[in-house]
Length: 340
View (cartoon, rainbow, N blue to C red):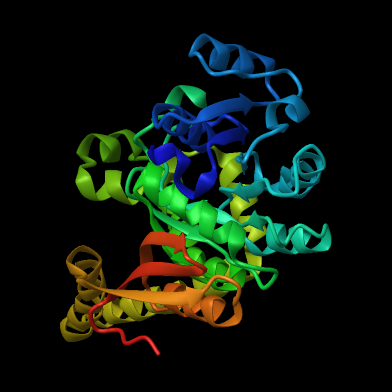
């Protein structure tokens, strides 16, 4: 059964919003023994109405589970992690789905949980929030960052196998700082730009006329502005230094466009837009090459180095198999990227 991939057959989800609810429903549909918890009693009631066990106490929800997904707001994760860890067995794999990784990874290490907490971030979402927006297909095939740590890769292997087996995830192994750097441009800065465009239109005296004319470019460019403002603020504050650095880089590029436009320099404008078009085309047209790597199950240094190098190079995993004292990974790299 796919739900038993990695030996993680009993799962719990703490926080049943858009992402947590989607994780929970997909795990249930895959045949796992699941339970959910949310601090809102009404959400717990609605989970029960959908056939999902939802005890009133988080400790009861997570007790005896093989894996627990922490899906609450970013500022609550360190405290929730400590509470859940105290109520679970030492072999229980713990992970989260937050969009910033360094802070919670540091908290886990400080709590002595580095051997069983694997920071995670599925790269998917919607412009709505809450359990009503949850969809068991939301995360299907998503790039899902996992951060293997120096305390061991056992929990990473089990969790990665589950995500591939149940969600068909493209598991991207990265260190927490590398994730936060890449996510700043891939996810966090786009939220700032979307809010800036939508907010500027909202202040314009031509607001209603603009909205009447708005087509795909405006709708696509402002989609993430439809998310919950508090969630976006938490995300940006949690990765503030990296977001500010990348906003400065975006600002420099925007300044180049502005100066070219002011000068009436068609050549410079065309060159800058060609650079942007090339990156956009690369997103759609990337080709990956597959490879396999095997490591002794008891040796972690070389395995950890491989995993982090793979993710930093833009690669991902599509299979994890542990058997006969060895772990075998099927990895994929952009066709133009060699791996040492």
